[in-house]
Length: 203
Image (cartoon, rainbow, N blue to C red; front, side, top):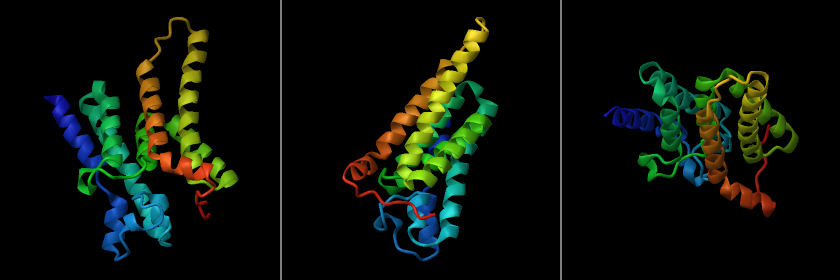
């Protein structure tokens, strides 16, 4: 029964389409008909309203953070499961016919709840790659891959130093799943990059 509670709680919070709601509330065009048609912060930025883009980013981060941190208090053994459900809620929201965002901000919120170190690494990598290439999609995929590799290398290094160290394969597995999902949600961007049609982010 607890699985049902976790699924409902994490999914419903994760599925709140803040980008869509905020742009609609402030009288802008349907965000799904602007730019990439995505409901995330990057596409909200394309409306020209930086405040709404920032608000969307913060809300999307929060809806990844809250389910994970709350479930970890009551059902710690299901923390990673809740993280995955919240993420899926964002990219497949029932309110918008299961067509949601790309999950990057929500993923960051999840990382903050799981590991401050990994979340800082993600932010640093995303900003660095963005400043170099100016592509949000490239930054997001590269940053999520960096987090996955860093987590794996850290555990490998600790295992070498301490043979009795009990490695947690679940965290590496969930980070791998998130990386695959982020690549999946950016499949159109990958196609645009190949065809040199990808829009650069204006900083």
